[in-house]
Amino acid sequence: MNPYYINSPQQGEWNQSDHQAVQKTVFQPCYFRILYLSDANLDIDCYCDGVLFASNLKHSHALNYLQMNPGYHQLSIERNADGKKQVLLRQDILLIPTEYMTLCVVEKNQGIQLYAIIDEVYPIKDKIQKLRIINFTTQQQLQGELAQKIVVKNLNPLEMTPYINVYDNEREVLKITCPMRGDEHLTFEEVDFSKSIIQTIYIIEDRQTNRVSMLKLKDGVL
Image (cartoon, rainbow, N blue to C red; front, side):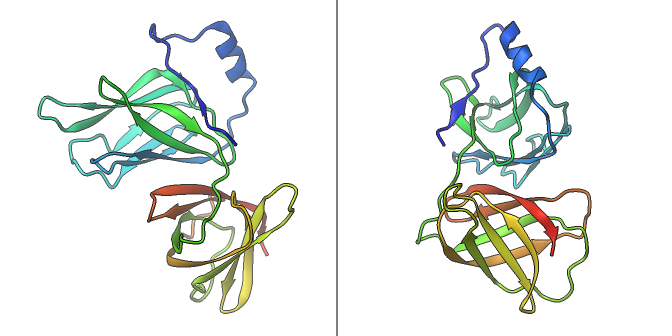
């Protein structure tokens, strides 16, 4: 898929068609990862039910927790007088959650602002070997240590929607869809499984490129 962009109007307001569009949008719980692609190494996780928090911030003064409502939002990363960055929330950009989404911060002439929402399928390349699953949730606690080999197979060649099998002591414990193409065997450097039952959203992070992909349970725990 090609990325699409939602640009903030100069007057800070949306026209009627924008409001009609958001009224038709069903906001499902979904994690976002906002990648700040410059020297500050700023990663922000955004949860569209109203919680946004920043993690792995290089500068401690940057906002690390922010409560917001779904709807019209803009995250603005601007420079202080000392040249450091700070994160501000502005109410003039629309974040539309989808099943798989990556948000990127792009450089502008005046500060650094979030304008790009990229909804795409990220193909796995042979050179990518180290990924990790974070924010992993399931409907039951997994027993034992999980295998480090994750098998990605293609469910439907026409839809290009593979799934990932996760094995616990050679026993398949769950199957999840993921936005990846082709048949690949991936070695995970780290697998972090939380025990929460609140969400079934998964994030795969590629440490080599700082790209992330969204994962969602297909049939629950097998």
